[in-house]
Image 1 (tube, protein in one colour):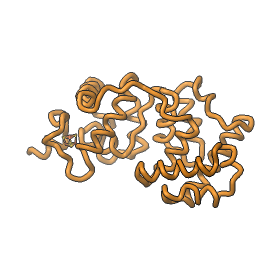
Image 2 (cartoon, helix red, strand yellow; image 1 turned 30 degrees about the vertical axis):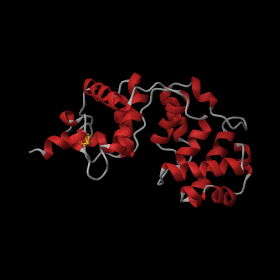
Image 3 (cartoon, protein in one colour; image 1 turned 90 degrees about the vertical axis):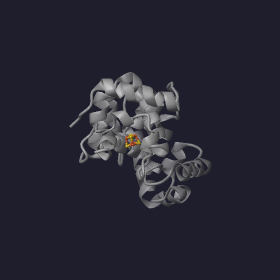
Image 4 (tube, helix red, strand yellow; image 1 turned 45 degrees about the vertical axis):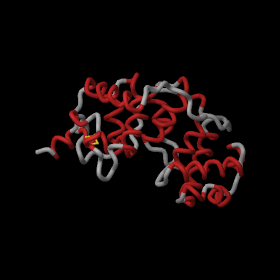
Length: 224
Ligand code: SF4
């Protein structure tokens, strides 16, 4: 259940923007690139994810080549990202599905003109694509108003008291997407991640230095 007023969310967005900067949308990557990067990023860090992606692109300069490649060659190219035996068949199956439903073309450009909820549902039908991956592709490649909830946003939202402790990450995506105002989704997403990396860390959050401490349930409980 959601426990937060959009006014508070706007206040958090303003406070974080003063610390981490105002963000204007820019295209991060082509949609299929973004999709594959998100698959590679599962259970690894950004450095290994980027290394795996670079290696994959060096070995197979276009997605048609990945589609035709044996799974074991894809797995070997993406090894730095870990779990390559799970990620490689998933990447291949995704590309197959995109080609099948798009007259053999490896492109997601048709999502541009689709209503957001339809585009989310289309992406979620791809093998291994959950709400966060779908939201990342739509936000970063198309600038659509969706709010992906990654591990930092999930943790901070619970600490602030916006979400129940027991809510799943998938449900958190759905709930926060409804309540975060569209025009701040991109900036708030990036700045909450920055905050989770530097201040509201998984272990030992630096609450005394936090600009959100007067709005935080975790902080108020610690003071009792
Ligand atoms: S006060 Fe502490 S727990 Fe709350 S958001 Fe800030 S760092 Fe996180």
